[in-house]
Length: 487
Image (cartoon, rainbow, N blue to C red; front, side, top):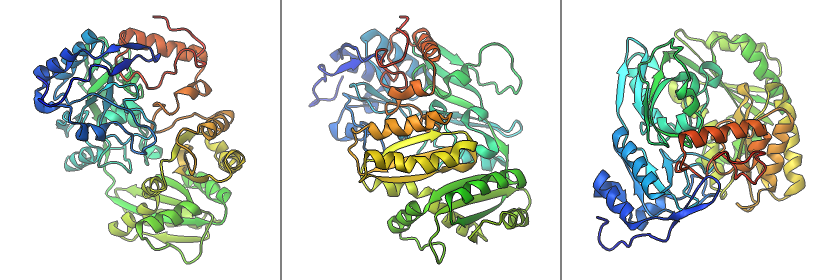
């Protein structure tokens, strides 16, 4: 039974992916959820629930009658069946580090937290590991290291971001250049589809041509097709010798030109991160860090090289050949390397302290990256002269995190202009954090009407009752999707 003193939230509506009210939550739903999961894993205390209804930025906020915490694939499957019977939609959550509103219960969905799915099953000889959806990326990295391997995906939010969330959004992070995104590491999944069926394919075969790649389909689907409960992941060869350098440039163009030269000349290159002077100044102020150089510069590249032998000489030769570098700071040890990384990884937290930012994470062809960076500032200024623009990102793979502060959270004119600019250059409106809620209106800028129609058909087949993340990814059919709902 629901704990005493908490009334049934029987009037909270649940909506489908087309924003159609499918009915209030039956009071019996929570009773059955308690029978299924146990009272301690059906959270209805308003003070606790409040921590699950907003995204990390604070820009998106919803409401939920309860937070449910299943502890196994079997419990997830039973929960999905329960939701189908009662017409209740779920908002799926992991570490809640997403920046596009993709885990927020914006239409009153019940929250399904997957953090209890925390098992790790290493396979050292194969260089693989099976991880529960709730395992933080940092814990996975530690387990890989204990096996003598490494995990190829790394994120600034590694201590909180989870395996399930990274699979849901096909997260890339800071070493896509070297190892690829999450999909490149993914060998199989265990998942509960929206129709209640459980698919498990965790054998870890490196060569398997037996039909559709369901793991690849679920990766990047943002929880709209199934609940990933575990993933079989490939590990990469450890590169214990690492050197980090911060390069300063007097123009953004020089920094981006150097990125291409480094990719061509430095075989041990594992990361190239771009940030600009305003962002560096903000991070230094927020974290109390000293300026890394005596004089200010327009742009900076945080460059990392790693190998099983010391790559310092190789990095030095590559940097010396650039010609356009104004100043260089090189980390001589791990502590100093971590300090240099703070200048880049501190951006998100520092920006968020200015108020809820518009997080406009985009991807453009590498050849168009310079043009995008040059044009995006006047585009934003023409619409909102008082807004502040903060740019940083993964220069070597064309991913720019466009952050805008000083405008109303509900003001989406700047969002539309930035996405349109990226699309006009052959780019995509999302590169890291998924479409979520923040960008689903603009999915058509990156996907054709026929593609979106195919997305809807897959959604209808695997989640016929539309109970999984109904506010995420797919735009309402009337908002320019170009195709009617086949169901």
